[in-house]
Length: 277
Image (cartoon, rainbow, N blue to C red; front, side, top):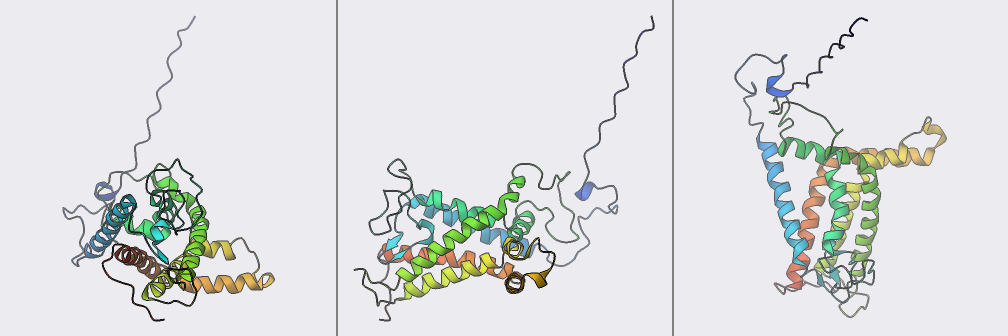
């Protein structure tokens, strides 16, 4: 009886080599031949995003100075737990069991929307992970798996965060309308805080409507635009906004932080809200 020989082991597929170790890269010691200050833009992006992360984290754990009638901070709206400041609403979905700051729950959705946004992917890929830091600049990583593994695979749920973001936009717009009431709940009031909340809501709508997911939701999967004239008009409108998506992303990010800071200053008694009538 012939002795069976073990099957030859299949050679393992080597991991793809990228960046400065790529075999097709020019054999030069420098990481790039670019002579301009290509690192300035990713450095600024890193600084602004990191500053916002620090600020939002501090404000989320602060659990205070977020309501000055009739204004509420966008970080704390809607106030979902019963430990909210009186006057901030009656939407207490979390009940009594949630003892921490309600902002820790609320910020999951707008931050999830931004972190999975197509533009912000480019921003933090280049600024935080240097993948790559700029065009024609090799990345330092030895391999690249794309968005097929954790945590980047979570970017695929961006469209669902988009719909959740629209709900919060409606809520913040309602908060801005409530800004036309005075501290006693009477209509006919308008202060600088009213304009601040209105501006914040407008910028957030522009950022959401210029989103790639919004463009796909309105005009995607259509074979003939001529058969859907209303959707075509909507798609044309959001397509124009989409060309300024990067601008709206940054302006709305700074705007929501400034809005929270303004309400916090009012609630802490730093200054009084200037009133127009």
